[in-house]
Length: 317
Length: 274
Image (cartoon, rainbow over all chains, first blue to last red):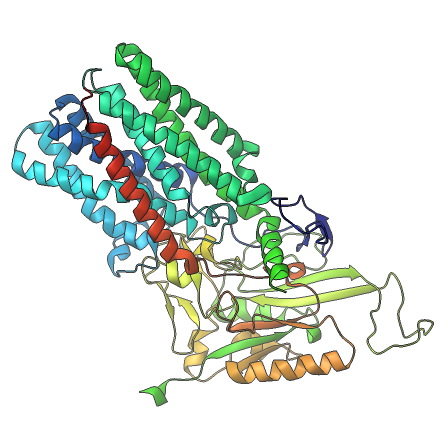
């Protein structure tokens, strides 16, 4: 009913004064206060994933080149180009006016993560492209080396800036995670890029990919858990419940299984390496989709906007 | 130059005199040629508009409440003029873009399509907007939205074209009770303080101002309100904060995470492992 108060579960619970009544909130016919993103899930959740895969792959590609692991180098370079290419197609497709994409570059605006990301991609994309094409053709190796170094330097930023992109919104389950989200994203990026290396490179070259997946997986899962806990019962709920919560948990389990099996069985068995790598590529995608959907669910829920703001006002008085 | 700068203009929407006629909604649609966006029956009192959107730049909320102590000034409980239980109170309020001092939509817009006008209002340039949609989840009030068949973001312009020729916005012009007041923001704030004091003196203790405080999380609204209940009852956030307030901290976390990834990848290539 309009104007009626709905009782909500308490947030956190620890250390709250007993005299504070149970959090209840009013809404306008239960309607959301903020608008949910107009972004399409395949485009934008897909880009969050592919940008991470590309960025971390570029870093692995440089390592592979410097330590003479040609198969891992080639796979990471080509994988990075394919991923960023597909991701950018998604970005373009998501625009209401795709022909106006270049308007992104008519200003330089640090207050807009999307603007900064556009500049970043306009430098990273060509670098990843030249790096991959020179590796594939074996020509212009010196230019390829410079491009590889450039892509490796920018890649980690490509993998992490997307966290600011979604957190710099009024969506509670995104915004409140801004401290941990970049670490979830780079962890997930390393998981995916490690998985790609395990799938594409022979076991004797894929050692760094296996270790990247292991470290990345630990960071991804650990940072996500911390993020959920710091958000509390209410805002953290979409990461635990509903479709987004389910994907989060499955992604977490797949990450753990893929990273551990890859680092053990995948050292000797090519089949185990491919299966583990595929699991990691899938788990990273699931995590990004889960995070995207958690934000949409949070935007739809008026309590997510009203209750924390009420508590903030109450604490101030 | 400074003398040529017009004062910051705004809306003061005094909901205590709103009669829910929706003349503001109609005037806005007519003047700005805002397309029709569905003729639905919602059952939400007399509100079929439902909320602000790309195609509704004014939205009159209707709230039917059953509350005690409706009649201000009455001291006799048995008086027929006074307090009666189960009496209907009908709240009406015309919502609009807040034209925030610190506007998240403007901050996050990657193309510069959203800009601050000489009147201190926030306007989308429809010939620049590429429909990226970033402003939509950034707005703490849920105002701006994408027009689906058009692909671009739209919202109230505070009738920028009318302001430029010295006219008042269409909604304020059409409002028959002066619930929507347009003018110099400083003057409107003074007027609102006076109106609030008058209502409090008359015993309307529920009356409160919303969005008038330059110290709030959005630096104060260019369009602010006098409400008769808590903001969330009207679908407004009780304590909105511009999301970009935390952006410097976000960039620091992003850089720390990127460095972690770079160092981590370097580390997995180091050592004696093969």
